[in-house]
Length: 231
Image (cartoon, rainbow, N blue to C red):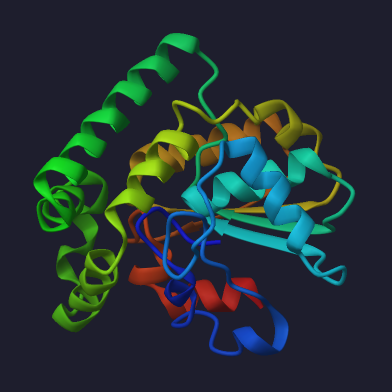
């Protein structure tokens, strides 16, 4: 499952044989998905209900990683393995959730009032993505085109329904997950590397991979290395 402003296409560079051994989906509000954007927990239930019976591993990046955690929490015995990439298990403090929701509403105003171009300009300028500046122009332009092709109303609904301001804290079900858990973070992504280390502190059985010189988005920044980890 891809990140916010992404789509199932984001996995193709690191999962070239995706169709042979896995399924990439467009999350609600993104890509070709045309379903209504429902609250976080409802969406988790919708995803779980549509997965083929043979799916026993879940992989998610950022927003998709949070949905992976939601699936693990809803039906922990369904998945033997899970891989979470650059994700947050949820805010535990109500005031933090309120602050995050206010921030997401500001992004929504920019998206709906300023338009998709202004939104993408501002989104890509965040310090979170600074490590992408050295990537080939063609790679960045491909990512930008995909973002510009998104539906503003879909992204806005996803921000309001699936953001950290709405998502429940999943730290406790994460700690209790009985399957194999792998967590991946970029060494240059200080915030999410800190989250990854906290995950390992709370659930020592977690396998942590730290990617040297990589920022928040390994799918974009080091697809071949990430692909090797996902085999």
